[in-house]
Image (cartoon, rainbow, N blue to C red; front, side, top):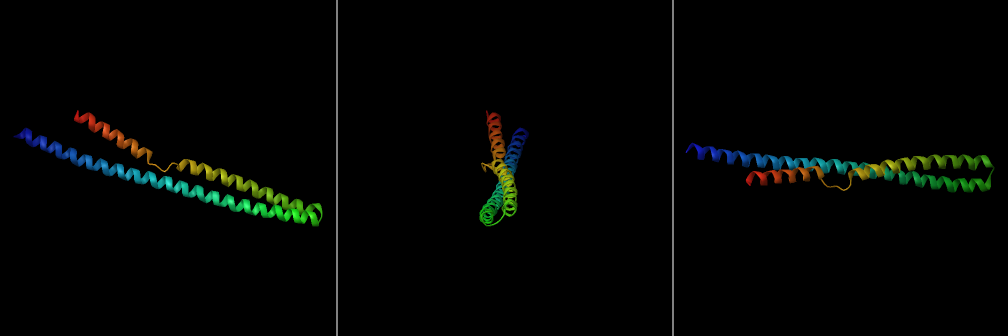
Length: 128
């Protein structure tokens, strides 16, 4: 009788532990997805900044061409310098944004999936 009671207790503990592990796996997946989404959002923001800076650079180039045709060398040269600085800033923002997007993609909770697979394999081994 004691053996049956002990076996029932072990099965109950196994079921409770399994539920706890599943909950932990779900929380891990949620956390991993949240981190990836945040990284992708930040990367997207940097790419938006890069796009705005590129638009400003193009406007500066147009302005430089107009002023270059209408005035002396120093005026359009200063506009070209500003356009070059905007281009450098846009390239830096684009590189940072691309790096952040690559870090977040694909938005799959790889760690949680791998952990869940290891748990399933361990439970299969225990049952065998």
